[in-house]
Structures are given as structure tokens and as C-alpha cells.
Length: 494
Image (tube, rainbow, N blue to C red):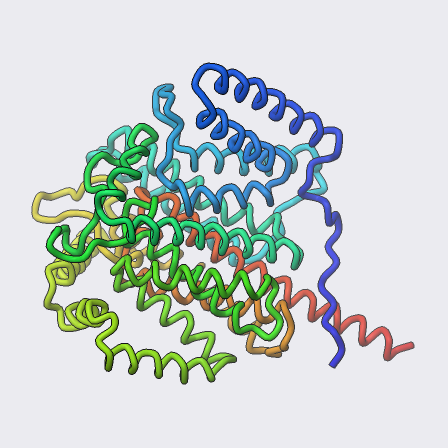
């Protein structure tokens, strides 16, 4: 079988700044950062100076190349999703928002300076843009339904996170780009899992003492240590620095799926030791979040990969499950799952009530929903543990249809592309890895809301970045196949 040639794109360095501009921007950021670090070292000590130095390095990555800026975004999402700059100018700016704006701004500036650069067209990209437009229309229609300054700010953060889809679609174009993105995603998620496991092992007291130090930087001062059903008599839930155990599981689940897929891949694009290490640390951390949606999503994603190519994974998985049940290992995990399936625990019963209320809201406001504020009557309320019903509540059936058209279209294109040839090469294995992660997200979204909740902009970013990677990999794969077929035809004609 002939080796598949990857597509050769025009302007392969199109998304790097021209050397003089890059040097000027990087030098300016470096000089400013060095001066600030020196001042802080003299007046406040080494810790603030080190923090500024790290911020300077991140700023250089953001300012020079949008692709490296995406790495910084991933690191913040995994490690400091709620951190703010402790300086209030009208608002206290969140770190993720500033970096997101910086990356998007760098991308737009470079596109403006070089008119030959453009966003590659694809109908599914247009469908995501249409979804963003419907969300904005629904937001405007909902003005007057209890919007606050925080509502406006949260929606702005939602749009910034959604814009990362278009950024990733535009700037990630080579196998090396996907390799680096995957490496950073697994490394950052694994590091967050290690931190969470260390705090969990140290116990509630140490967890409280460590995370309380983040309060001046935007982290909540209450519910720092989380328990099942908020009952201290029940097991503590692992959160790391993500505050909410469910949303942290929403980060770990796709990372675990990708790590497992790359660990067993015949031709992994990342070092196998990194994939194995990430899976070994993320897996236990995911279990200790006690997020049933996260567990089911991870199992579903790995199951898709096993069914598609690595069916032998079912054997060790089944053997491990039987052994755990026989020895009583993870008894609390199985009990929590059983309570959810049998609708016994309060959290599941509350979800059922949320679903009923969401359907009532949809019947009353079917077209564009109620916007992003409060429900129009006291008998109903907004907020539901499902991204699909949440979109229907906020944006109505129009929003739900555009959302499903976008994500299911990307899902279908990805699987059609992979199933067409099923080649055993690095590109195919990487596409399968991210398809498993996408499947995990879409299943988790049936039972939780954070992937499209404006109060969780970091998880909105995770969701749309995964969609962008799947779409980009699928489109590039198809273009490579066409180029390969064209080259083969030209050779035969000679």
C-alpha cells in the first residue's frame, strides 16, 4: 500500500507572524515582563516574580503565533479556569478571557496584515457560525428578563470561547499542529489530574488550605471542598483547581479517551509513554470526581474506539469490571451508578424535574426560547442538566436545530472519513482518537449542562475545540486522499 501523502497547503507559515513583526512584538513583551518581574522580585519576593515570568512567557506564545496561543488556552482551562487578574477596572478580568481575546486578536491582526490569509470555507463551519448568530439573536430577545452585568459578561465569555472553534479550524493544518495540540491537551489534563489526586490524598483539610489561597484570584470562598450531595458524611469529590467536580470530569473524560486511544494505537502521534501516563493518572482522578455522566462518557468514548478498531480492549475491560465487583473494589462507584439508573438519589430526581420544566418552557417559547436570563414566570425556571435541553430553553427549536446540524454534521463527516479506508497510519489513529472524545462529549451532554453553559466558558472552549479538531482532521484527510488519487492518476497517464 502506498503511503498517503499529506496535503500541501499554500502559505504553510501563513499563521506565523512575519519575522520583523514577531521580533518586535516578542521583544516588547519580553522587555516589559522583565522589568515587571524585577520590580516584583525586589518589592514582593520570588513567588509574584515567578508568576509574572510565567505570564510573560505565555504572553509571548500568544502574541507570536495563534497555534502556540491555543496551548496557553488549554493550560489555563485545565489548571486555572476561574483565575482572574486581581486588578479591577470596571470588571475583574478573567485570565482565560484575556488570553482568549489575545489569541483571537493575534489571529485577526495577522489576517489583516496579510490579505492572502483567509478562513477556509466549509458548510459545517457556516453552520457553527449560524448557531452563534442564533444565540446572539436569542440573547437580544431575552433582554429584560433579569439580565445583570454578570449576564452580559458571561455571554461575552461564551462568544470568546465559541470563537476558538473558528481559530482552531483556521490555523491547525498540519499533522505536526495536531500532534502538538494533542500533546498539550493530554499533558495539561494529566497535570490537573495529578494535582487533584494529591489534594484528594491529603484530605479535606489540606484541600481547603491549598484552594483557599486562590480566593484572592477569583476562586469561590464557599463550597471549596465538595462532597456527594454536599453531605460531609459521604465521600469527598475530587475537583483539583476546577471547583466543580462535574465540569472537571467533563475535561478528564475526553482526555482519558484520547490517552487510551493513543496508548493502544498502532502508530500513535504522541509518545506512547505520555499516553499511558496520562491514562494512568486521569482514569483514577475521573473515578474520584464521582461524576456519573463523566464515567459514562469515558466508557462510551473508549467503547467506540474499541468497536471501531481495537475490539480486544473489551476483554481486559470486562475482566477488570468483573474482578472489581468480585473483590468489592470501587463499591461506592457501582452503588452511585445503580442509584442513578434506578432514579433513587436526589440528584437524579432533581434532573427529572429539570427536564419537565425545560419541556414546559419549550412549549411556551418554541421558536427562540427565553434568552439567557430568568424564566418569565415564577412557576418555571431556567437551567437544566442537558446541553440539548439547555439550548432549547435558551434559544428555542431554531437554536437546537442549528446546534444539532453543526455537531451531528461534524460527527457524521468524521466517521464517514474514517470508515472510508480505515488505514493503519498516524493520521487515521489520531482521527479515531478525537472521534472517541467527541462521542464522549455528546453523551455527557445528555446528562449535564456545562459544555454550553455561559457560566462555564472554559468548558464551552473544550467542547468547540474538540469539534474543530475532528472537522479539521476529517477535511484534511479527504483532501489528502484527493491529492493522492490525482497524483496516482497523473502517473498512470504518463
